[in-house]
Length: 440
Image 1: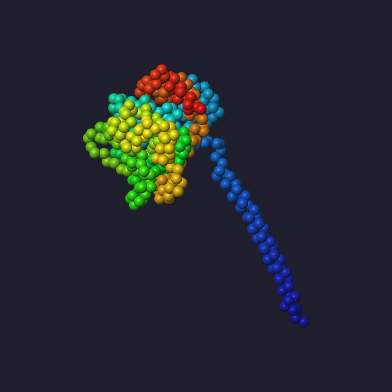
Image 2: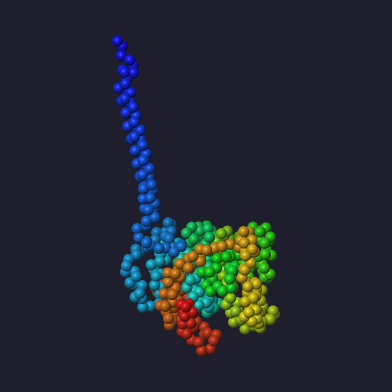
């Protein structure tokens, strides 16, 4: 009798069913294992990417450039010991801050300035520009930049290996927007070789309070230069931008320039450079600017009365001030009461109208710039400024600045301090007052 087919193939079906079940179980196990391993692996990768081995803090802009071959000393516990053992005025943290400029770093940039500002303003200004790539500083303190020493500086610059020179006031900060690493050095490195002069349009501080004490750390809003605005925006928003003042900017509007160091170079005022043997080939940058913190403190207005000895009349002030706003500010500071000055300051300098601010911010006339604020706040919070000030409690300002040259790569030229305007105040007591004011 023939065997039924279902009996004949029954063992084979059992075997196939068992094999299929085993394969399905194995596949499920692999899926579960993969789902378990995957998040653990991702977490491990994320941890490895975030972990840097040791904690070496950099301030913004201090990261080593991939184009440079700079070798930096590794940190050690002895660094902290050395900080407290200095017996001479110096920048205690300076040489450990990745600010040492070696011969391989190019281009080398120097800044020249004339100032009567106190150390509380000069130090943040200098350190900030060191962070973004300035190599040397030529400082003429107490307003003596018009002396023959300027010519001596220009003659000595080629011997010092400098490639570019800028003239900046101590109420101005370079803003190398568009440059990698927020680096002025990188920005000038990318300038074509045939270019002799680079124009930086200026942006003007637009303060939002009347009680600002440290503009570099407290001001983030600026009015853009018309060179960086579409013409229809500039002309369309002009009336709102001026707010009843004489011009678009309170003070100057023609920017500042950096010149390539070469023979026959001479300054052409405070804003441009001239060459006796040729017409400089210049370019104007479309993103980078110089930030001008003008009248950023109420005391900038009240101090106007001490700027010159002319009478506070419309005719006489023309002898001292070129710009209409400066003339008006001098007259107000010389004739008005404190309350009247504050009212005028809020009407003409402070941007208190929120709707107007938002309108001009949306149109691009006003802009927010935070990088200088972040860098200087980081420097200040590190304690470097107060440490530097504390290291020179009895030195006059020019001797203190000259002492920087002996302990750092910066070169600082300082002229002799002029006697104070107030009788009986010595150079040392004036410096002490500056230090006391800053450390409060």
